[in-house]
Image 1 (cartoon, rainbow, N blue to C red):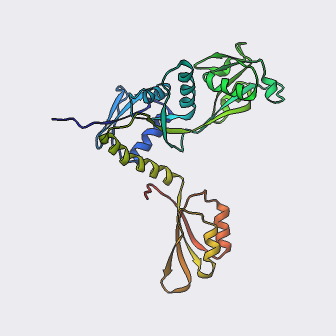
Image 2: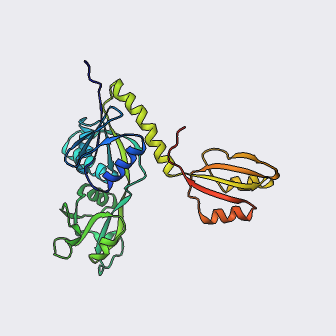
Image 3: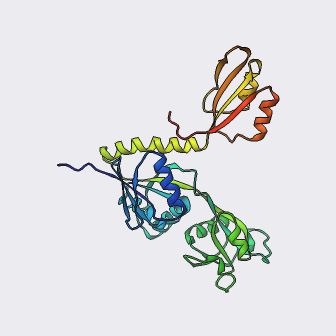
Length: 299
């Protein structure tokens, strides 16, 4: 009996990215059999296996062809690619699609008392970082010389204990920097999660699985960024109403029973729908305005 090939996806074992990834896969209809004690999880309704590893291992597993796909932060992906290129190791991959979660940015931060007067203020200083390759690339692009010490954790304490002049680390809210007496002075890299694919061609069976999975992922991402809008609008104001609701397609216009002056308008809006927009619609004579989330989209 021939065993059907299974697509292998690498994801973070634990943490915020792991939670977001599992949520994404579940919204795509995958039934995950995940156990905290097991590094390999199985999808029970599709021929897919999930390898649960450290984030820093994901790019290498995909680049080396051990896993067919990986979901990883762009910061980790770019740092790993630069490091592997420096060492002469294989660093090819395909960035299949960007994902709209795990947003953060890599920044240089200095003690609050540091007198920052621009990039040149950093020349010749020493930085503690987990991302030496991204920091080094930034320095070369800006034409300055920087030194660094590599730390895998507790980067924020380095200036306080005299290990470095400043730090280069990931920032989400900035609360950790503030708590450690640091201020953000330069953003050097902006990151979200990405779905990446091995550069080696997939066999027909695995490609077929991916061709099913990828539209689902893209549909979930698109739905998350969209809203379904329903309202009643004056028939003679349809053009003005449409301009306030940019969507993927032209609005659907439906008659209302017993009303010749009003119509129902339905549209998928792909941009943020603000209270101000609703107020503008009301000024045009619209009412019964409903803004609803979309769970799935396709086509």
